[in-house]
Amino acid sequence: MVVTRVLPDLDQLDGGALRALIVEQHREILWQQQQLLSHQSEIEHLKLLLAQLRRMQFGRKSEKLERQIEQLELKLEELETAKATRQELITAISEVTSKPSTTKPVRPFLPEDLPREVKVYEPKLEACPDCGGQLRKLGEDVSEVLERVPEHFKVIRHVRPKLSCSSCERIVQSPAPSRPIERGKAGPGLLAHVLVAKYCDHQPLYRQSEIYAREGVELERSTLADWVGGVSRLLTPLVDAIARHVLATGKLHADDIPVPVLAPGNGKTKIGRLWTYVRDDRPAADSAAPAVWFVYSPDRRGEHPRRHLRSFHGYLQADGYSGFHHLYDEGEIQEAACWAHVRRKFYELHVAHQSPIAAVAIQRIAALYAIETEIRGRPPEERLEIRSTRARPLLESLHAWLETTLTQVSRKSEIAAAIRYALSRWRALLRYLDDGRLEIDNNAAERALRAVALGRKNYLFAGSDTGGERAAALYSLIGTAKLNGYDPEAYLRYVLERVADHPINRINELLPWNTPLDPQIRTSKSREAHS
Image (cartoon, rainbow, N blue to C red):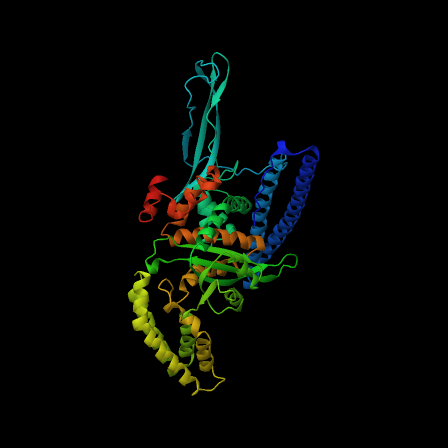
């Protein structure tokens, strides 16, 4: 989590308070630098270990060895990304105390054979602002940014001519254009591509580095990690805006998924969690923009959803996880259970044992879903009326059948367990009959977690708790863009072109549904604009 530091009004502080502020900031810098040294030491150790494993790999092939190498690559990637984020924090603190950072970032080499696009920023002044004298050319400042447009790299050369006054020697020059990462060599399109490749297309940074090398651009994994760390910190206010939007509704979908995370110190993995909260009322003809908010926690304790949802009031559509149950005690949050979970238990029994009872249950539940298919996209009042007249009788019949069937099967059988699961949640399963905004199931949250499941398969684990938090933030941005029909790479490019200079109190203007991007022609428009 990134802590935003606000500099107090120094003119209002006395000498003692100023000294205390400087001492506090100095201690913070020392602590952060100690953490950097620790990360650097572990990074060097991992690089040595990787080199040894690669030599062994060419001697004798082993699936176990391949997996170990991939795990170490990912751990190294997370450490280098965390190092970049911590270095940016040290720089920010140093700027507050006017103490320059001693660490200089390594500038990636920009190949000379790449195409170059020159952008010239002429001063807008026609005469010297001091004396009105005529301006003459003095020189120019040139900087280069590596950019990526669809299918290829190019270099954008920013040229800022310097003009001097022939009368008073005043120098006039246009200000340098802002960059997503200060003094960084990556353009917004390249940064967007790296983020989407990692968090949407599930390509770890070390694999991306290999892909770019084949295109003739050498980008070390550590450089890519620096960029990911810097951008994730830059986009934190936008993720917070998504969270506020998600929670400002009367109905939420919630779910969670386990994520293996490397435990510090012992090289083993623990199980963290990624929680997802989805706002999507389009099936009930609501015009509010859909959005998804992911949150990481190091474990699955119920205190986490309680903290996430402390400002939420309304219906929560979720599974039967016990950690959610405490949310319903005060009555401000009401449970709406998921029929897909009920159906899944009977479906698994039918697939495994060809159970005729399970087949009947599946058919009865399918009739409920057929009604939902018909009313999807209709206003809540109409949905509520149709459910009352058509679905309620089916549910009453299903309830009676389940109770009767339960007395006819073995209490210890799997089919009895599936029936008891449904009956024990019956009141919450009927909740969708009470409000036309509700859905019959929690599939909106499960769909949001599919990207995490695919990424988890490729990543094997997250490198740290910080890496889990960073992944949650990027999944939130990418998932929300996709829910609104936008190409996530085009959306992130748009945001990264503007966010550095965008007022924090107007951050909502950068949410996907507030941008001028057209979701219907997003891909072709993006290619035309950057070709």
